[in-house]
Length: 165
Length: 433
Image (tube, rainbow over all chains, first blue to last red; front, top):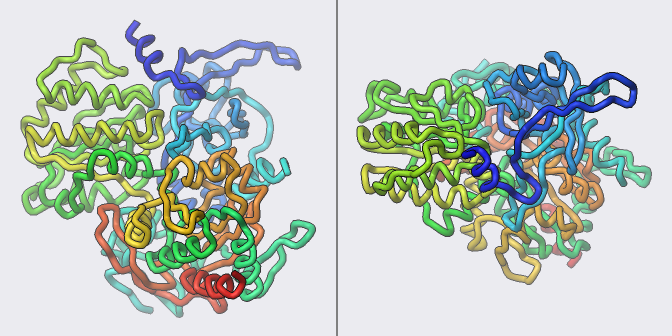
């Protein structure tokens, strides 16, 4: 019951925290696919920092920022193995990332990505007149996909934002 | 081969000043004492890729090399003709450049904002409400025996912070380092910093306000009625209370866990009041963990020049301050900005989806030393020298201590530093308006 009260207390219009679950749905190609609803957290990793400073067009930055750190139990729920592609999506955007087991343990129902071009596709841009968007605790859905990751951050930004013009 | 000592690292807010850089034939071949990120930064000018000439998009949208004068003239024209240009970034460059940026913003009636908008701007808003109870990092090292890391992960974001200024540092009154200190970490994840904590509080993400309120209740002698508060057992909060009783000087370092989560500045506002309550029991101060090496410097320079620390709007002919309207993110998300100058930052990396959608639709001038994901959105790219490596100047550490950064190597032929690029842009604009 306490859990419910706290979830209710911290409900925001676009970024509500609610009971996290894995949902079954039938894939149009047949077979039973799973998708996971989770809270998306962002932050720093030292590899992301090293990647940023050695060149954001390079492999270090791409590798650090395209990774989606997940709790191993959540990975089992949606039948995703280490280094497989997942689509992370919500009302703000969708991006293909690479699922990995979290090096820094996090509870089930939460996922973590190093702050960067990939994470920014799905964060909530509303600032509520504070200047600061919601960059942590965003509701996302995750499902396994076979799509390729972007080559690097410049490629991702080009495909995500320039193709709309 | 030369080893340059006492080199200041221009990466994060730690601004470590004990770096050593090995220079051979005008190129950096190694560093000593710096963390892996600082080392990567010093190795980049020589060993990484960078643009060596300015570039401009032609009618087909392809980037073509141009000479510096054409790039600067065209940039000046874009800014002079814009109704409400946004001049953004500034945190990864020196104070002397920031001053030019402010002069330029005033000249073109634009908005001057820095990367704090997606970082510690909420902290500045809270500080303007409540006060700024801080001290320098040296005082932390020498006095602090209760270290609280709230919503930050210095092991990853500020790698040498714990060893230079807090957990492991052997201070004048804390000679045994970690053994003289108690570490409390508040983070929903078991981060590498949390693994070193004596007490790890794991709240649900975005519920820090509840934890701060509960701690304030306990400090003021009122027992919270719930047994579990925001996912944290009440006993854990009482453990922190016991620790408070056994220590003399508390230091609260906080980061994006408070500023970027739901609540934003209203997470830091009660944290400042918590410091006030802690001061009834012991000496307590706080310190925002500033990210870039000169983000604090930009707020100081802007406050010195305009009266406001960020989100300064010159469109009325005099500086005004209205975060939420004159913040860079809002200027873009609401599609108010009709041109953008980026200098010393990378919105392609750090701005959310809707902001970048608008950036893609407006003319963008990108002044940066390295290749970055703002390049695909840019119409003019002007490469500049690396501040703190290829030219010297002033920066401010996270605790607002001014430190002079050194020049250790020359920039490649034809690459100017950004202070000079902006100076030339200002001269051009003065001829146009």
